Image (cartoon, rainbow, N blue to C red; front, top):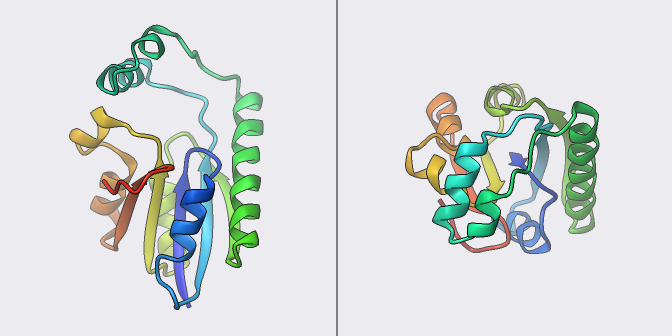
Length: 158
């Protein structure tokens, strides 16, 4: 059985669940899902991402920072939904919340579990991806194991 650490910033979409569960068919996979409690947003990077994606209205809308309790509730809901969806798809799953900057937590968890790989599922973050400052690039640099970065709800691999 393969062990995969899966980092996601939102609840996994049905498409993403199907994709990761069947990525190594017929080999069974055990997932350890991590969701960051995101209380801090880099508003400049978010605005640049929105501009690069052609979403002008979103680029000028200030989403603001979330109070810690609201961020924790949102992250817990995303974790619960992701774990439930993976289990419904037949996967063996555990999960946990991690801090704002999850790279160190992912690397530590992957080493502790002797994980075979890491999968990062995010919305597009064009600025960070192009500068190789996205989570997947940073995890690759620190871990030395396979890291797959997919854009949520798409077949795009970064």
